[in-house]
Image 1 (cartoon, rainbow, N blue to C red):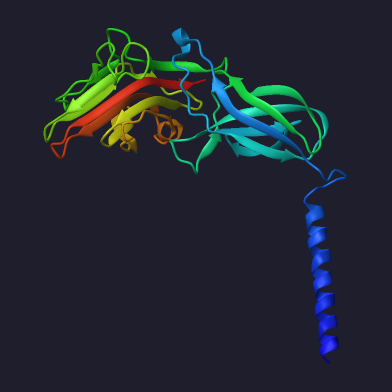
Image 2: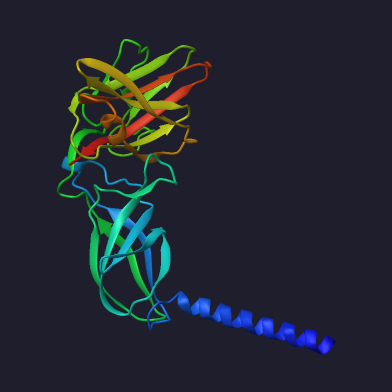
Amino acid sequence: MICRKFLHILAFSFFLLLLLAQTSCEKFSGSQTVPAYLKIDSIRLTTDYSTQGTAIHNITDAWVYIDGELIGTFQLPARFPVLKQGKHTLMVLPGIKKDGIAATRINYPFYQEINKTIELIPDTTLPMGTLPTTYTTKTKFIWKEDFDNAAITLDTTNATTEKIKQTPSGSPFTLEGLHSGIVELDTIGATFEAVSHSTFTIPSSDVFLEMNFNINTSLIVGVYVTTFGLINEVPIMILLPTNDKWKKIYIDLTTTLNAYSGATKFRVYYYVKNTSGDHYRILLDNIKVLSF
């Protein structure tokens, strides 16, 4: 009786082993069972500063295609398997966190795709190092503000008690270049609200706001949307304190701008009000609004 039970257990175990072996083989379709590997360390952005502004970026991911087939999206740095061998066409799309949210990763449409011919060898890692990208030639820079010029293209509103200024030359608060923008609010009720000096026509394509920021309080970023002669104030994001660190963010304006029937123009605005009496410091730099 015991022997018969043992035989049943042995047969069931053998069946499980066969099933596992079959499942493992199904991971690799076709005749190739040993993958090659690709290793990408990072993606670097280069710009013409005079026309495109800063090259500071926050490219976090690589969207990888081989011969037009999506292999996957990989957080950088990355090493990943590819079930191909021989020469192939590699395309990498630089990826970002839309609105700074990890769950909304996209390939950024304004960064140029990276194309290379590669040779894959099974069980061998092909190191790609740091891949270079630029802004696409179709990218239109609707607005750029790096706070290095004498005139700042942010206008304060009637609600403002404190204006935005340039950091002094050589200031440790400057991110890059000659100056960054700085706002300091020290008393309860002190308010900063500013809008882009120009009013922009809403394009029929993607619109993104890029910016660097270093803040010790919450900052509202939004748009004023003009519809049928009326101006609608629309907050889009609340940026949280950065713990004395500069951050780069890509804010998608497209959905908001397209949500209003008859919308024709928009301006970007920033708003913060001191509600505690603590020292609030807002540092901004490298503001860009992009479209096609």
